[in-house]
Length: 345
Image (cartoon, rainbow, N blue to C red):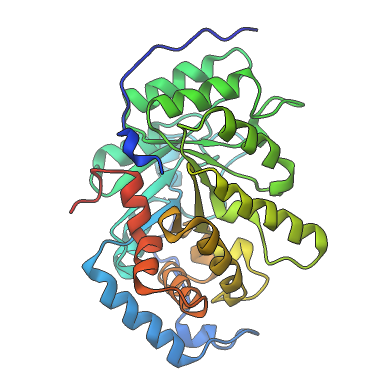
């Protein structure tokens, strides 16, 4: 069907942005416990990472990618989970706030979780309660009847969301993000100055042509590639080619990269130092001003711990020989530039 043209509404962001589970859950083990893992980081390097973390507190540290969902009590009372998507670990906001405080993280971009699917009421309640700490990234509904377009406009224009996530696996069977509905939502985001996050969980190669087509047709729409576009350290020619194509996406000035969910990318244990060469190449291609760190809370808590996730990013950056100014951009400066007038000063 032909999707009706959307209304001409004012941008949310200036165009200049373009260029209840138990509270006793164990957040993480200690650094010393991490040293017993197969891959070890020296105490000196971790100490250096902690020192640099403290030094960087003159600027805000912002987490570019995490999720929250209702506690079982909240779900039973007011914010039900989507059937079949009940969470298997705690992700309530009190846990997040405690983790952020322990790690000295000042703010975050909350990405709508699949656990609530297209019902944004829980995340909306968190955004309204903590307007200076969190920014919301809603989930695009690619329904064939185009109803998701109006839902997207409401979330952006009325509920205060400032980003939208495209999950290609939610598109109708046999269809791509470049179908008519997808293009209307993508272009609409650009009109409003709203970044589109793209999740390539099953591999970038499946979706890179769609990304290239969308970026070519709609250069005004900022793009956030979640979790390094799920590119792991290459082990064969096919993976090397995929990573090379990923780096070439830097030719689109609107494309940003989330250096997030490191445990999903690394082939090693914490602190994931095999990602250092990848980060070095990403910064060389995109520039640190288009790269941003993200934790992927709450999943990271069970992997290494939230505070440790931040420290790992610093260790990896040191191994990649990044400058302190590049690290500051990755740990908060980039996302602050993208979402202006948030996380001030």
